[in-house]
Image (cartoon, rainbow, N blue to C red):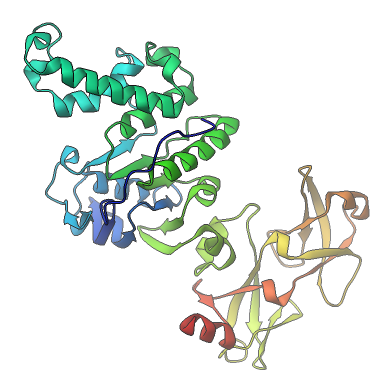
Length: 399
């Protein structure tokens, strides 16, 4: 799908706005959702990102009406939908398993939601239905809608095939087409790319993002894959232990995490985290390296200092302005070279990204010093909450 030839739907105010308040859900003694609050704007692409078991799929199923919450409420377009069946909520869901009917053609799989909505039971009967008044004009309108959607997704040559004759990527397009044809208020996508190979996932990410721009409809996307979340979303909801830890645009999630769990989950390779302590003189002591950090911390207060692999630099030998260690491993990915540096007393190595042309300058087993620019260090308290220097905290309050 290189070009989407579909005009955006005319905006209808808050048609696709989703409002979630105080959502809770338990399965037996296991609490899955712990008071989730979210506001999703009409036409926004929001990804719910988190590890397995964090509650993201349960949240999606409650929005869809496939699961009933224990407490809290869900509203779509300003209207509470808690008492409505899934087919009354004007949403469409794309599942991980595609959920295509194997005995139906692609055309019939896409048309099915419209036939169920627009035709009575008698009109849907294979032989008798054709004789019922009004069926033929409705079937023609449904067929036209299917052809429009198929043209957008470039699956017109596949309309006569059955799912067993399709590749994984083609099945995914058909599943998306079946959702599109309903013109719903909200698209819900529950890990729709997880069954595809790596190359096809990259391709489908771009197609889904392009489709969202063309349709201008609300998308709520669930995944554990941070690449999907970071490349497609207007905002990302990072969920852990049944609640959102941070809701923000992808760049802020990566550059400005509010919780150390967010910092660790987002980013590859993972962010480096080292123990540090306040000096009481407007700085931190990170394993002998002093980092300026003007915050209201008593001397000796234990904190955690973190920095991304791409924010640090490495030099051979000993450097008093860096963290002294030994190079244990070089990870050459072609466009990137990552050095794994072992520091005394630290179990996990520190990872630093360097220029791939510098491979010969860093022999494994030799001494290496890691320099950490203070401006790129992120500081968290012992519980994992973000700490900010006084000036930065003031700017965020008034900015």
